[in-house]
Image (cartoon, rainbow, N blue to C red; front, top):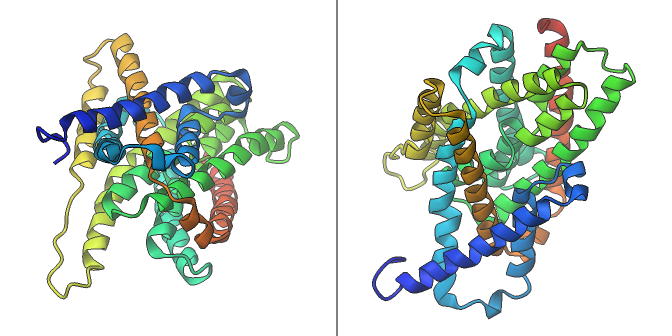
Length: 339
């Protein structure tokens, strides 16, 4: 047991070790070059973790491993729950029915299409196809991490999926504003905000994409994006049901509803009541970002690059296909239905 009398100190040492990675990542993310590229502490943390895990991991005391795994699992769940303080039902309602429907269609069509194409055409393992598709469809790294909790997949698959999200989300962040500025997209500012929020991978990337036009467009992008985040809850429940039916034990599969997803929904409801001061909510969000950074660092440390190499370029091809799908399908819906 990680916190048994004999193991407690070693587990805490492992957690503190991951905490140092998180602090370092947050410090590095403040460099202007990383901020201009939209590279946040989550990306830096997993990269630092992977580098350490595949070079100096043998120097790490084995007794500390439960602490690292605790950060990658338990702390991650808490971070996902607290993510609910970034969303409110009022913000979602402000989008109108067309914006909400666009988000719903985008999320579930992207996951279904990506999972099918990944397995059938790119010959990817099922869990990896789902993780890449989930990251593209919902909210980037946070969605990948949440889906990994349901799938119980190996850490390297999570790292691969997050890597694809970072790459194509970054491309979107630079490409879409350029297309809008040069009149190629031909969208109104409000339409572009909806387009950015419904198609760009990470929350921060969607914000930067929209704000490159103006502040109001950035706000629209964030609201649309956070509605995609809300889709994480029904998706995780559906994924749990699906995984239960995929059981090959021969027995009736037990459907496990991810409890952290339900609490995440409760937190969104609580946040919608605006009972906490804005300063406190901001502090919670900063703390949540720190917990997510710790989880990313831990996952990086647990990632074996040899297994990533064995996967090859297929996840990148799938992510590229989904990037094109998101951009084209969202553009058609936004130009047709959003005002």
